[in-house]
Image: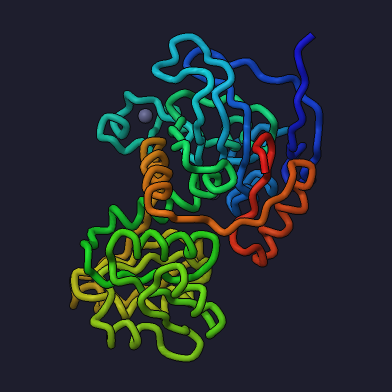
Length: 342
Ligand SMILES: [Zn+2]
Ligand SMILES: [Zn+2]
């Protein structure tokens, strides 16, 4: 008889998070099985919970911020071996041969784009299987709880910053000090940017400075665009908030040739074309990254002491962890501790 494991699944769109017993899955060719140590709870898990992603087959186990240990390997898996510590993030795999993949645009794969916890079961479980293509190597120095949020919130901010065109010494602003922003500020400061944190109210200033921000702008107490311009204008703004008005208020603080990089899923954003034209400014989005980007994020974080601030829950309290995350009150990421030692 197959061995059993505990998992938390969503039985149907709009259904509850329920703790169930399932058979431990076997890895198919080119996939591995992972004994999960920790899994972060991300706002995008609500896409599974509420059925807002087309084509999800239920029941589905969510979770795309996974850290664990390779426990079994399928046929033709190279070069991964059992016992290696790995992470799995949002990008679960791509075909490798469509035109987009051939251009290195793996996120746009048109044949077989896989998303962890959406296309296949994710990390809210004691074991999961994942394509070998989706694995990031985890440095020994990094604990599972520390590493998990880096697999989505971390790689998204890290990869947006390192691909933003900003150079060391440039003024870079991080809009929003939440799950993404509190990591973004640390990455920006550690990458050598003159780092500005922008958030509502005075109360986050001390934390922002502790995370490495050189400047803090209270977007309630002052006009954040004017405040950025007083500092010379931002070469890059990384917008992590989910409020389009909060984004719009900062657009005017982007320096000539600067980039306003959107990584928070907000509503429609209106932009004055004159602002773009007159200063050669641009507004663009950034996708989190593929497995090697996650690996780079973990490596950078371990060597530069970038830490996610986490609230930790056991697997059986996944529903509480999810509600806490959705309430926006978590400081700053909720993480399920599954096989990891505390
Ligand atoms: Zn996520
Ligand atoms: Zn492809």
